[in-house]
Length: 67
Image (tube, rainbow, N blue to C red; front, side, top):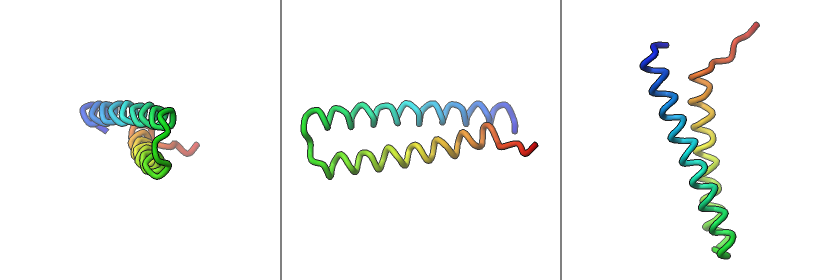
């Protein structure tokens, strides 16, 4: 993989990581305020989708090596 591609993947992973943390903070704030459970559940689902995308990107950056 070219250095440029790897740098782009790392940048995208960093963005997703930050967005994931933002969702986490938003969910905690919603829980504190007593927001609807359905809205909180939807936010958690979006957060999980971001986590899956992040995992896929990290797998591209550091592929599994079978020894």
